Image (cartoon, rainbow, N blue to C red):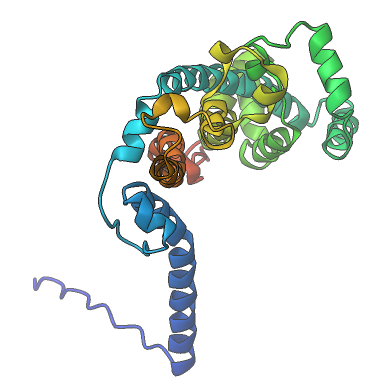
Length: 307
């Protein structure tokens, strides 16, 4: 018996109009990538370049006059490391609290048998458009004795209505009711159903919410600016802000303050440090993303239901 001839894949013939559309799509995609990546590349290049060339506008793509002086000044500032420690702790515990509150609330609101879920959802959505304002919020935090306490960075904003709505929508569209009924028939309670069935299937939305919350906590500075007055509890963003805005560079530099050359050099270093601070503050978040990227693709429900 003669073996079957290998199947030859015919090349898809595309019309002229299809090729024009493809060219336009690739061109637009390349333009979007260029517009998105260029500012990032420019910031990194400027942070490694000679401050004088940065001020003169000589940096376009690659570093010129390679130097690490800006990074040395930043990393030699001892409070930077204290800020890193505080921000890491705030991000870790704050994100954990966000997920611990958001996921159960979103799952409860997604249950069809939960009486009053639509009214509660409308009430939560109302708070997205109207709030008490800064002064009433400050008075509430003061009454709870959270002002000037590190706990305020963890519990302030523990509930995000936007994230709750996103998780609720995911549970409604990706956790079939039949799967929940099957778990009940197997003897699962509501708590066991949530912990053993729903959460393992919700890894994509958990990863997305964790990234959103972590980035929010990492970049948070307004709450610390308003509610914290002890430098030992400041997050990283406050220390970086102080370097740029409050002119706390005198303790980081040596020289004659009456010298015009010193003042000029100080201005140049400040410009270089500005870009270095952006890199220092962004690297940890950028390093976190690749570990969560695989969960961004949906499809965790494949094979969950058997015929």
